[in-house]
Length: 213
Ligand SMILES: Nc1ncnc2c1ncn2[C@@H]1O[C@H](COP(=O)(O)OP(=O)(O)OP(=O)(O)O)[C@@H](O)[C@H]1O
Ligand SMILES: [Mg+2]
Image (cartoon, rainbow, N blue to C red; front, side, top):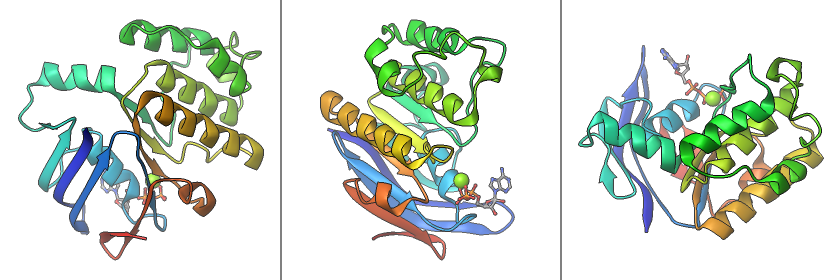
């Protein structure tokens, strides 16, 4: 099953950012995107995950051309099939960590995985308000929230950026187990070459294009 297929993507903001990017990801595979700050990695991730429309090119998710889907079909696809972990975590600030997980699990009709909370080392802080958690704890809550949805495809933008080495490696183990157990896919943007090397493919964003490394 092809989870993601992008064809000839080009995008510019004030100046051309990248041109003619094509890629494919199959079930069970992961792809790392590396490259210097400002090269357009997050922008590409936003395009691949349906949040930003490129100047030109085509994005297919689960073999559907997303620009031909109607709004409600696209919302449904995002809600049930995509797991988005972005650089700034969009947790509901007034709620506890647990309430944030509940919202996601109710929307996706999945139960909260207590074992996952333990592996992420957040089982003891889960009743606290999001604003009372450290940056790294918030990051782990947002990872738990996304995996609780049981997405078929994960988009993660530096998900371990706020974490120490040991915790970052544990988070990568959790992602790998998740992909294997669920035949899911992941696109991972990271500055960490050792995490990138654990993915099925590594791509580098450089000089306005994406090349297999
Ligand atoms: N919404 C926007 N409007 C205008 N310019 C933007 C917008 N989003 C990003 N850019 C510009 O596009 C370029 C690429 O940004 P992007 O966030 O994709 O880089 P990145 O590779 O993810 O960098 P980093 O590693 O620092 O996260 C930057 O110069 C940025 O200023
Ligand atoms: Mg970025």
